[in-house]
Image (cartoon, rainbow, N blue to C red; front, side, top):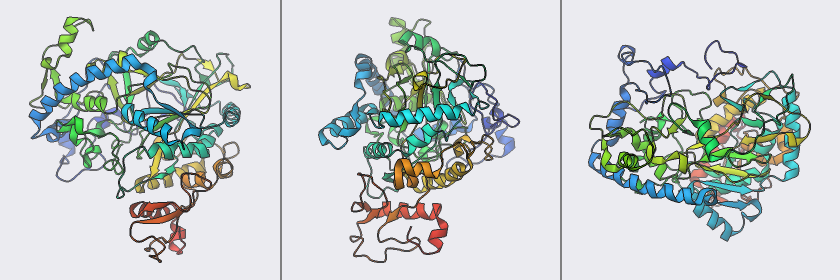
Length: 588
């Protein structure tokens, strides 16, 4: 949060933990030896400050980003230039296919069919292709109605907390009944296990996809359009946006915009995703070999090097939204191309157009501008990374990323009914509409509100367990999630008398929901914190061990086996979250 800014004050964009001027020359939190040398303050300050984030022209970053770009492609320049031409050609076909299929390409499956191998195989195939999927009827209607009703009452007692001015449907609440119930619901946890199982993992990967953890995020609330003099400001429910309405609403000096989560500059940084070479195939001119569903290089990635407000610092496999009310088409749009779109926005900073764009975005002149023949690799890379600035999400714009054809490729989602759960790959560009501004928080009938909660899917890892320990403390104090608390002091506090607590979590989801919140340890048979398994016979040799402690979950029973790497992750997570038990010698 910007120093001196009140917790209830709204601004035109999310607060930063450092000012824009400071961030323009701020080195990452950590540096990889031998990659990007740490320069002195005097050297860093020679770079001009970043005074404006968005505009018709991309901004120049500190000069070290030119070195980062140069190092990423050194020795692969010819391959990269050839791959760019192939990528532009492939994108033209991709966008045409997306435009033809529209929302019909988004796979969906009913929660009750997750045990049907035929249905899950079809769903999994399409999910990997397009990066997004909908699981229908995850939460029963009776449960969503209770969550909405209790949350309306809860919001009614918190009228002093305002929505974000730049996104007036999004509130800095983290422990409302809707959020706590949704995260703890056993069906939500089961859906997350299923979705995370669709990623490609190896026995040596340091993560446990069968043990989802809770990552707290905000809530979105749209009112019914009736003004109340003492209510919270929220936008009204409105008819779904047409494509023309959406385009008009998104027009800015940089054109239509979308955003990508889980970092921005970090995708190019040697201390970010490139620490483990997540995108090496793309930067080496082999984007066809890139697999967006391999998680080996992602588990230890630092996705927030600049302390961005609301920037996710854990490894999450999917961003997700759970609808608690009907969500009509137009509220959520995304670009369903996890492979080609990602390759394009990662490579875009390395190429410049030989001739400027025409005034009209159609016709022969526009096609000539987009042609691969009109683009060349920068022989001496500049410091510009289109749409990326320190501490903010990656922005994708039609001006800076013309080959993505955002007007055609950003498709609207199908109608979501209460209890439907949509999840998408964290590399996908997306946009959430807030509709219009200025009306008041409703109360009374559930039909007066449209409500959805952000519920991403994240596996248990050592890094995620460290975050979970901080998040647990925030829960116990009623503070925002750590990624949303820029001061670390919980200036916005939700009082214990009205917010749901550990008792309510246990009632909704049982032991598994408590474990996901870091409130109860995971049990691994035959292991003991700080010591190897005492009985090698019980651990089935050196390959796997038995896990228990997942409550009533049908996905992970006490007889299911996990790899040695998974067992080690569980052991370390328990030590992190329950050090007193481990010191006393308890098996945690």
